[in-house]
Amino acid sequence: MRYGVTGHRVLPAGIADCAVAHWRRVLPAGSALVGVSCLAEGADQLFAAFVLAAGGRLEAVLPWAGYADSLTGDGSRARFDDLVRPATTVLTMPDATPRERGFLAAGQTLVDRCDHLFAVWDGQPARGVGGTADVVAYAKQRGCPVTVLWIDGVRRA
Image (spheres, rainbow, N blue to C red):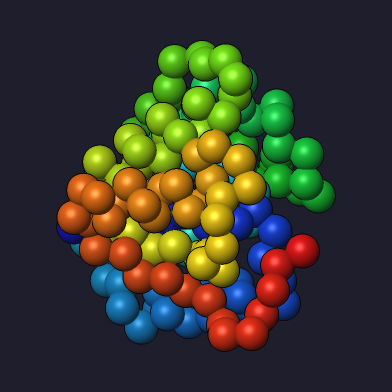
């Protein structure tokens, strides 16, 4: 089985711990674990790091060539580099204008490559094309099981 992730780039306090605790409970360790991530800041990098630390294999789906240069959060570019290097597969979407099309294409490709999607998501509409809500909607349309990981009452900034 392949497990994918979609989620917010900025995670409020407690959400990362909630997601990691869930993954520890339900995911296999070692080579039986295959994770698919777009390696964005926040939930994507958190899941990718978890997969690699558990001894799993990582597949990366990037929204466009040079995507790493768009990562501006504290340390997110360095984490991206550390995560993409050991990935067994790296798929890069064709360059798109506007860039949001690249996010949507990557999210849809991620869903098409996984058997189960984890959404570190507050349940709110996407703030841009290809956001978490769009990826979750696509997964549901495709019949891909989705597990939402969030804490009731927590709001994102």
